[in-house]
Length: 193
Image (cartoon, rainbow, N blue to C red; front, side):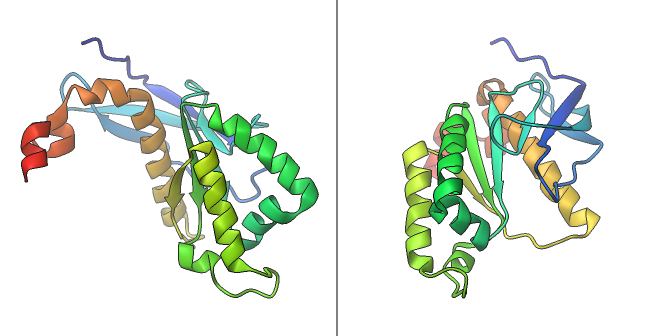
């Protein structure tokens, strides 16, 4: 099997409309696809750009994994129920669905979406509509209810998102290495346990 070349530098593109962007570390370490017990250091830089869709992606792999971020119940409500914003958001969702691994990061728990709120007339209907959107477009959903404005918490979320975007890109290379994913067991042995 031929492995994808792991770059020594990646650029996280952050949509210029993100008011409070996630912080990303200056470097990440990932397992070497050819030597799984070695780590490869990848330097990370960020760049604010007007993305055609989504809020975060890797410049080197723009159509592989794109992450759309939703910060709260009110934002979801506006995106789905406000007539003008719903049209804009539907176009954006269609574009997001065109990438190989589309993700929606929701900074809430499902319980928080269902929470009573004077600005949200029917939280149950909002949850239903949000679920329909996810199903219609085949989005992968990340429920990450982080509230940390501290640099450490934001950086940990950024590290996870980089790891996720890289994992989507290198998915095929790592499928040949089940011991990384199963702790040394073959896929058949892992399924038996």
